[in-house]
Image (cartoon, rainbow, N blue to C red; front, top):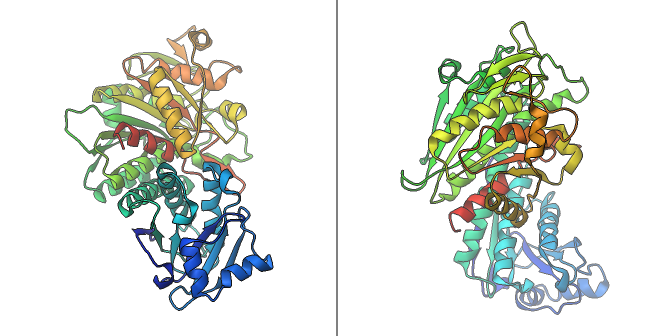
Length: 497
């Protein structure tokens, strides 16, 4: 799929700018000025006529396509509602409305005349970053296993006229940031949308190597099961024991600064299909368990965004990939396994497998002497019950790290909500036959899952994002690519950008 191109220019005369479609954002009851007035004159008063006739009132989401001029073949008026109510929520809607207004049009190139919005510089930057991200993500089409995919978005190039609003270089940086995040989101979505018979642990490993080949600052290595046994990763290997697909531990490094700088480590749950193992899931909606590797997909998507942006920091992605299947060699409820940390775990439920692959990956992460570690996992149905699909669950052993992630999520509208991991909950993980159990009973399921992970993260700053509710939609079915935007914004903040 060809990525959209975004260009920032300073155009003083909109009427003279050649384009297939001139886009004019207009507020209600606002006087025409700047580019709008220039294009109105060039179209013999066509814009004023549309307003006077009542065909267009500039309410939020309203749009009308007018005949163009010699230079601008089409003129798209896009309503922005009341100027005083044009906040960031309205900006998000504006991006959606722009996409829908052009979705079924034949224009492959358009020019957005921005200055009429009269925003503050920070708001212009935010709007352009979000617009580029949204258009990039909205133009995504799943094509891998369908013979007649959805028609592609015709628009492939958007020029932003910054005249009087902000400098073209600042606009270009905002557009570049948004596009990179959009590409990362699409990377994650496409991986998660693949069926489990294609996207196996081996496929994820190959894809990570392909991603590294396409970006000079990325390198990828893969630990096979033999090496994992040598390292003592019995918890991770217990999950893949019933499957014919071998587990993989994939390590992708992004080198953006000196080798002595501590890296930020992202750890993704990569269960490429989750039957529940011997603790078999109900059949209804089990097909959606192909999305159980969405945490791993978000790690690879974030690394792509970071590589596209060339951020001046070091990032390491760890993907703990396995397929959870029942079989003659599968782990059984009541089995006790040993983790890389040395802790023994009583497996009371084989459907609580994500924490088993993650605990060994989190122990492995310590060898990189990380600045911080964030794991991302579709971990618990309990988190869906608690937060639905709007927010990812956030748990952390460090308040500053938690606030940084919450702030990043709010900034890009990929939000999280902090949940407790008080010591009071740890007692629920007690076992008579091992150091701890892999489930904590029916109450506070997302919290006890996070408490389990916290046992393996005591030597560094750590946060856990439970994305069971936010990683995919059921109607229409498909991956969301979350929380790539949150993670990329967090890393942009760490880079001081």
